[in-house]
Amino acid sequence: MLNIPPIRLLAGSHANTAHTGSGCFMNVVAYLNGEAQITDRSTCVCGVVRPIAIWLNDFMLGSCFSPSKQTANSARLLPFIERAMGSATSDAGELSRRAWLAVDFARSMASLAKTSTADATLAAGYAADAASAADSFVTDTEAAAISAAAYATHATLAAGYAAYTAVAYEQIAQAGLGFLDRALPPAPEAQPAQVMARAAALQAIVSSETA
Image 1 (cartoon, helix red, strand yellow):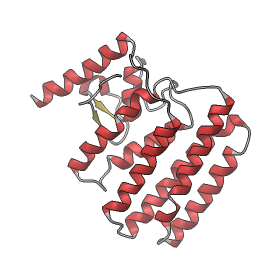
Image 2 (image 1 turned 45 degrees about the vertical axis):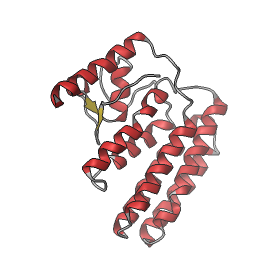
Image 3 (image 1 turned 180 degrees about the horizontal axis):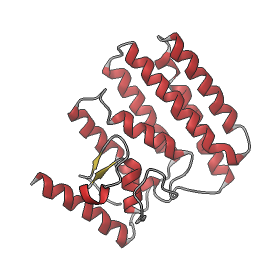
């Protein structure tokens, strides 16, 4: 299994990952995949997984968590990077399975939006959109994940307005990580040599900056 810590994951997209050793979940995927441009739209990642992975990265590394918790959250997200690489598929059954996992993730946010009527109403609309997309033709499954990610965003906004405790924020993080765990198959025991070399290069940059 690829051992990529201590790569630093950051909120937001960062095109300079190759030079700083840091970036968001999808930036690191793009770099390790050897892509010419470091973006958050790597085609090697399943379209159902990508928007939720982006949202979860920004949430778990956002200001609602302390710097030390952000560092800990980065380590929790890192193992899913190698599982996301190569997850893109045209298998209709697998895409449908992942889309319904996205719907489940969206629905799991519902209880966290209860205290804000406006956001709860918006969240319910996004949940309905997610279920509708997942129930439609398989080429629309990415729409289910996009709707689910938007739904989760409104749930966290509601949590902030209601001054939720850190326990509630942790429940949101666990729901997102649970989605990634169920949606993405375990990573291969051995990654290609070029992927290992790129991971080592990012590690070296971070190590030199912290030395």
